[in-house]
Length: 79
Image (cartoon, rainbow, N blue to C red; front, side):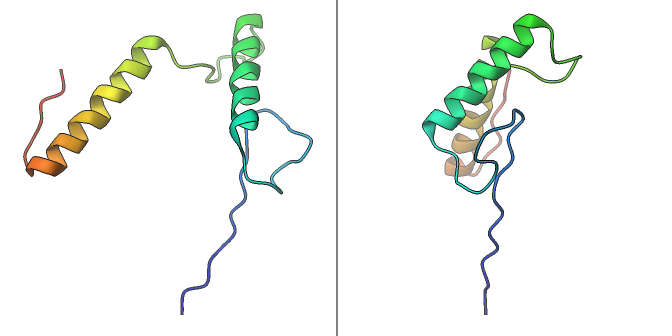
């Protein structure tokens, strides 16, 4: 018998609801906005902030290669 486990969620910047609700678009948008402001103002002390455009592009290239690899059951070069 499979018993589901309710995991909740945790975000980097505190919220008023904590982890009792599932995140939605507005929650994710506010987290991105908080990360941008915190990174811009130097509040992160070297911690991860926003991804760069180059990192976002590379993630798309990597996931596209993974989809092609799975579909064709082959190795796809990622350059």
